[in-house]
Length: 328
Image 1: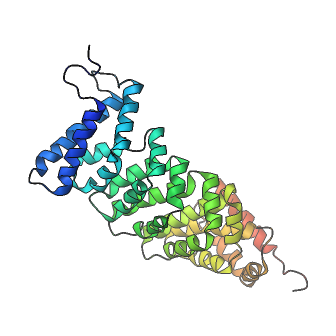
Image 2: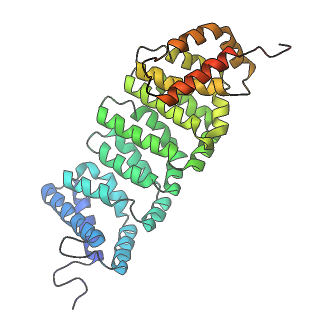
Image 3: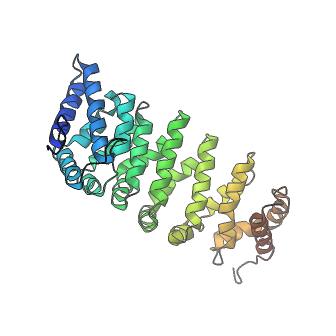
């Protein structure tokens, strides 16, 4: 009994056929439609080997390993991603489903980081942006791959991608951006500490964006980053800068109640800090009465939100009790 059944292709044949079809697409041959069909057909065969079908189980581990090895040896992953815009809708979807889902693939991508960089620049091409986003978030689940992305210059392009005019793409880019900055806590804390100035000078532009959604999302994420205990060093540095405090105080007065509310969650970190640097204390003291009065009237309709009301009462108490540092 043959291992693959009578007419079934083995991994080497499927990979070879797929590579030929992608090469044909890349060259822009007249037979592009046929090549697209062949790409889709062979991607289905790969998917069936990995995942099985309603009629057949997935292939044995040895076959899957052989398939993976063929894919790596042929450099087909990178080739597929580089030609994603030429592949039809179903083919794009299958690529998105299959890349980054097996640990040997993770090790392979570590040795070929251009796969990740090609996916990241996918946000610049509307027709493949969302497919690339799906694959990037799949890759970001693995710390080794997230590290390559965070520490690359390409990471800073996300500050641009999250502001693109196409809402779906901007939202998708923000999901990937957030995933990279929050999933692997220690990796993220180290990255933010080592690259504090560069990251936060870019981040400041998001907080001052003309785009309401960008401002709100980035403000909410900032609150999450500062309140995560792994980011204690980053939080301490952020809340020691008087410009950051002034920005949050201005955001508390924004027209949008949602932005006011997210700003409150960052502002409270400045006030709750038991070791306020003098410039921070001076600003709070200069505005002491106004702040107390403002907070007493702030979002009074949130009567049901116990945590918010407790925090607000705590802040009012803290601000009322502020005293200048003796001898200054």
